[in-house]
Image 1: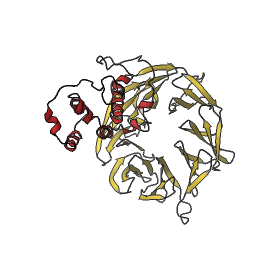
Image 2: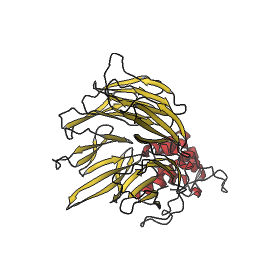
Image 3: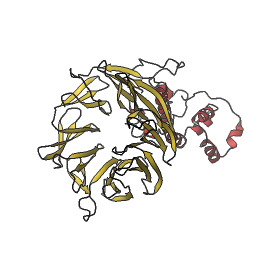
Image 4: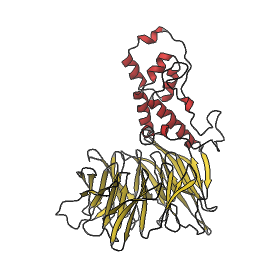
Amino acid sequence: MCESTTIASTGSFIYAVLDNLIQTIFQHLSATDLCHVASCCRWLRDATNQDSLWRHLCQGKGWEHYGTTTDLAKIPSYGPSEQAAGNSVAGDDIVTFQKDRIVTDDNTAGLTGTCRWKGVYMRAYHLDRNWVTNCSHFKESYIGLGKKTHRKRFHFHVDGDLLAFHDVNGAIQVYDIRKKAFQCVIPSMKYAGGINFKNGVIVISMSYHGNGVAHAFDAKTGKLLQKINGNWGGSRVSLFFDGELVITCAHTGMRENIYVWCVKDGQLQRILTMDPSSDGVRVRDIDYRDKMVAAVYDDDYIRVWNARSGECLHKLECPGEKSRVTLGESVIVGLSKKDGMAVFDISIWSRDTGACQKVIREIPWPMSFYPNADVVNNFILSRGMTDSAPDHQCSSLYVYNLRGELVTEMANHIHGMSRNGRNRVFLVDNEPFQGEVKTWKEITFNVTPNSFVRLFDVGCSEISWIDDIRMIIYDRMERRFLFHHYW
């Protein structure tokens, strides 16, 4: 997709159409149709070159964030193409978006510059085509893994061009993807929790020697910025970090409160607590997204809090000893499962109003296992058992829309799923043992508000990270990392 600078002649009849009628008609056209209209004449090009039209099209594709939180116009490409799709046509086989496709105000033809949201759509379309054709800039790296064999999956955390992970000695390595060089090393710390990485800051929880703290580090220098004294001792801690606020909840087995801290000064902002009469109520599960905290307690209710104000927004019923909760962009999803039951229910509530939109009942799942689900764009991804899995060793993926309707079911040996961006997700598909060898493949999907489409498979390697613009693969046989940049 590109701007056309060809101006065709047209009769005067087009000018007789009212502007508001023209805009009403244009709102019902596709991007392709708008481009065809724009090529007719200068006046129609200007009429279709409107942010209101193109932002609406971006929203329909799930691409609005490519002009806000993940602004593609501000992300440089990752270099000249080293790999292209074999069936690409001329002009489409270049991974890098060509900037001259955007008409600027200083163009020699005297045209109006491409409006902002048409530019967003054009960049997002180009990125999407790269994923669909598996067309990427490809790099490989042996980034100091040491001589020990890695038996566990690598869990990467990426923020901009920086990648952070625990090495075999427990230290945190920070690697600059674009420069292909290490940025810093944060020394090994005993009893460190998972990595939370945002806006150039790494936050890690620590639980040892009767103390409970969280450390915030500068990802570029490794310098300790703040120490958050949570005093949770050796208890398991749920910790979330969005670049500004740190959310902690220590699972002590007694009264469990949720704490909101400011990473800038390490100070406690507020405590999200239940009614004082509810002593002893514990948090079964917790999630955090967009300044909203949701926690399911063992009194069979989910409470949803505004992390900034501390206001309890909703109280939602979600019974069951193995209940879970997850937050989407517009919904709250509760997974309700009681001990001794081999099924669970999915409840969908509106984030804005707390109104129940749908309850999906009796999804099969082993009695002793916790259910799990994730919300990606406008879809709920949940694992459930298949009829062919009496031994509970393999499961299906159920994909529901936000109305609770089953969109698709993958009756494979789904072992796990992960997502870090809004438009891409991968699944781990483990095949049964064949002799003494167990094979697996990992499947990538494209997710838009209205579609869930399989892209391509990655066999015998592990996808360590996938987001909107890149995929990082760990080649276990060669003990190397493969970087695929789709932008």
